[in-house]
Length: 111
Image (cartoon, rainbow, N blue to C red):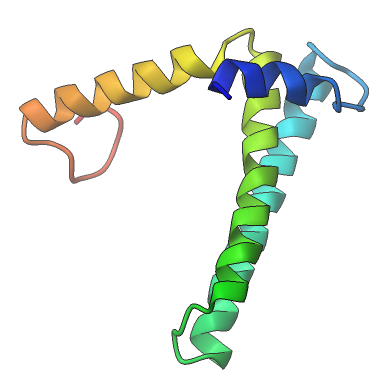
């Protein structure tokens, strides 16, 4: 499955109001933050309760949450009228430019 195929299939399960308007964009951004926060919580508990040991069960739970993150990323891409493949390609191009400039590390978008 390609990223764009995933994006199209994810659209068939999108049930929220305000699609292609500000409320739809906000809904997807908040959902993305919530799902990534669930991954943060899982990892925090590994540090607190499991001495930093990442079990196979935890890896499965993280993978499941990553699927939810991907769904919201796909929906956000739809909300701004972009395909995941073009977003992914542009990101790799940006990283390649930074690598050539020796600026992969650091802060800010203008590295």
